[in-house]
Length: 552
Image (cartoon, rainbow, N blue to C red):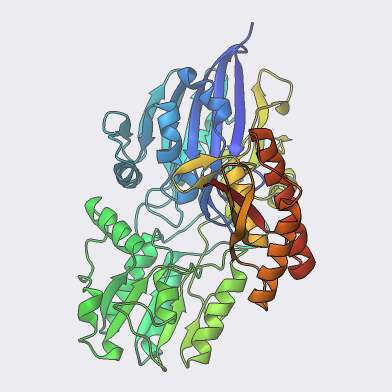
């Protein structure tokens, strides 16, 4: 029987974020697998108490003995954020370039896991041999240090997995995109290209970090008071730009926020950010005149605990903002964050602070390829087949139309869980489905979206909470008034509500005598129904209800 070459995304196809991709090769009953990236996405307000969501790895956990390794393209959270949560179920080798490896090590340290023996550092443009896969790292440009595409060579042919990328002619930090090697790979022949779809609707080019630097310097040169720049901490080129512009405008710079300090430290350890001024401690920045200081802080998406939100709310211990100061949002407004960001912008403007963002000035460029960038990649690589990933369905379908325009012979539309046969076949196609889904990180525990803890919390969030404690005598009689406690119910007159609830409970209690466990369960069920009905009649809410029976 002939060996097969398969591709299966478990996350990141049909959504932006949470990237996890599998490549398999071998006999139909015995494939060897590699995993490319292992990311998270961030929960919104519809899932109270949950911050992180990541792909369900069940399909590959069942095949972990045949998993040769996890190969990481770069250090963004949507590509590495799930590693410390999922790796303990896989226990395989991890491959990453130095900067990514440093951040990975920190993630495992926080979980008290020693990863030393399983984390292998790959030099830039280096190679990894995981028979039958020969993997070559290709330096690309993106909005983080050391972004890589992967040339995955198999006995059936070559796959190019782009990861996240753009064509930046002046990336400022790190090497230029390895156009020469991409062209060589194209000449050798590429069976399939797995490609980023994020900006497929955007015409032209995504722009250069150098252009942002020039414009940011112009903007900062005209500002006379305190300047606060907020950006993604992971964008080290933007961080260097902030340092550069601070120095050129005669200002000191202070870093604010844990992530900003962590990335700065990691970049320095890996030999980046060499020729910049030394940042000062935010606590010391208070000693400088307003026109002599720049703060570079986290929270560019209006995160409730981000430094920017705390500064704007006047609760940050080290950074004060005043009328006449300026805040520069040097970042994209990520879809879904508009509401909280505009609320933040409005609050700042109302307080007399100038707000500068990508909507008013050229202070940000994307890290993903616009259509002209995509055109370059297609012309260099000349793939026989394109599989769009890293996009919502609308992005991926548009990317397929674009690939047709570029006269790529084959295009395959996928979503999470689709298994694509790349070889042997007349043309690549989805031929099977793997189980896929998402897991929520609930506290420190992975739970299914349908788990009881999530359902209960949604119920509590929407309907409030009611607790009833009832005393039972040794003879099984109900003793005295119940003890009532409730939270989150829209009650105007508490005394009236309690009195009515006591009456409803008393009515049920009179019909029961608690002689055995079954009667106890029946009593609890009847009380729950009565309490919820009463609450619904009075408040319109059916609260999460807990009944305690205490024998005295």
